[in-house]
Image (tube, rainbow, N blue to C red):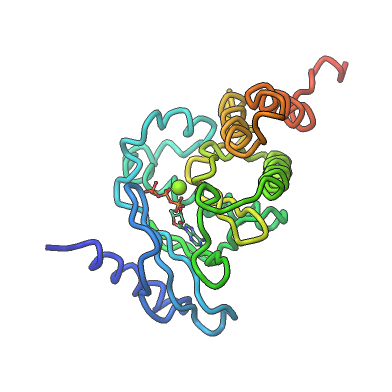
Length: 246
Ligand SMILES: Nc1ncnc2c1ncn2[C@@H]1O[C@H](COP(=O)(O)OP(=O)(O)OP(=O)(O)O)[C@@H](O)[C@H]1O
Ligand SMILES: [Mg+2]
């Protein structure tokens, strides 16, 4: 039987041949949609380890409500003949492109290195030399949580400046490197300029992080604060009534 570890070994060998890693490494997390490995980096990368995210084949074919994330992502008519294969690839491509765009814009995301087939290689995020924990599991003081929330809101603002809405943001998709939050997991990201209704996805992203990180009970009700934060950010970047242009 062809097991997960056979598949990881085969995928890793493509990255070894391409000169990015030297061995298949170890599993950080086995997931429903993707698994992430920590692999020793090729010396030319100048880092010790890198993270290899391997998507399951067909992982998103039945992705819940995938249509909402596909809106505004256009493809050529001839690709329709291979729609399923194309869709599988689209999620990986989206994640890689979004990481590139955000990393170049200075948003704290793992540095992307390369993509081969249904797998992508990126910076391995660590905390004290170990795999960085999800923000959900990071031990934060109250002050830390308030500072991290401000940093996440700043990152959301910068993502929006790049035209990107994460679409599945939560404390499960943010790592904590001991000092700063690092946002991960972008396959379902949407492009606010071409999607026909991105605001509900954006608002949900903001609500989830504010509800998890806002101090309770002294702060305004988190849902109220989230709605206000989301509206202010959105208006800075998008809410321009075209009639003002005459
Ligand atoms: N660059 C990275 N550095 C260190 N750890 C990472 C990195 N990327 C992902 N991980 C680890 O792998 C886990 C899963 O990654 P990610 O959230 O991107 O995949 P996923 O699509 O949520 O997987 P699934 O939904 O199938 O569980 C993360 O929670 C984190 O623990
Ligand atoms: Mg995730």
